[in-house]
Length: 441
Image (tube, rainbow, N blue to C red; front, side):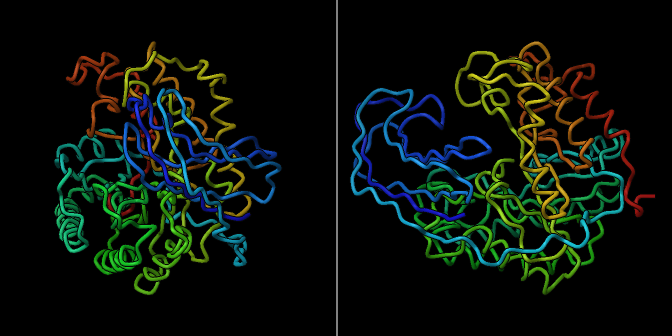
């Protein structure tokens, strides 16, 4: 396994914004191997613009049989010019290969953690009462998420003030979380400098994978949270960064595994027992675990997010799209329960190889997927996760109504359904099997 950095200067003229984020200017590497093909690519700008750089890091597995590079346009018309194309070996295979964990750390003594992701800014105690006491969930994935608009401050001191505000919001809800038997997976959704995507902070050059100051602040922030929540029995674990993306990694600072390891060791020095949750790059998807090694740190749970196929789960979210059904064909592939199981095979292999516990931090499908497709998709996926003994949180509870199981399939109807939907019944059926933490009684 080795990592390469692809860099190029690009300019574009005369084409409209791409229909989807994966369309438009293509700066892509195609990797073929025994497990199939991968297409890592840069997230280039769309529209019309003058010369600007684009770069991304790509991890090439040791069993790759063919690697090629492609440039051009996809699903748009116009012209793109590329200059000063460079491909460099940015990182050689790691020498610190860990040994499988002696025991599989879960971080709790319950049969299973089942719950949902929540958006703290709109959350009330009555919502926690519904989720924890009425529906019987026993876990929330608590987002520390910062929504920025053009012109908002991107300075690290301002990030510190934002984090403190969010932690106070959590602190105020800890008694309610305890009353309703809800453990917390604390998710740093917006790390300093962004989770790695270029332009995440309104075009700021600083980023988590390009700026050492952002990485230092990331570690210090987790040291602060480790001290703050040491001994807090409501806190199940720290999810170090949501869906990290190494596209903008410069090779001059830590990559994600190095940075996560540094933060983990800093937390361990303060709290030796806290469960740590680590997602792989790129974007925390299942296939990313083929190219990721565990940390040399104890008590780590590994997490992925499942939105496969993305065209189905996110249909109509970012742009108009033809309705897609499940089971059904997406692109050229038939997706059903067997296809979902196959998509999760890299996670199963990672768990077996390294003897680690798996937590699915996010999974969902938009409610307007036609003919009950979202419910069938969720049912198949939950059954697979249950067979494998994984903990999970649905995305999301009372956040955006597109993901809401309390709303019906009619996209134009923004009001909750007066009767439980099949998707709500499905979640509540599984939550009904939960046991509560011992301190809940």
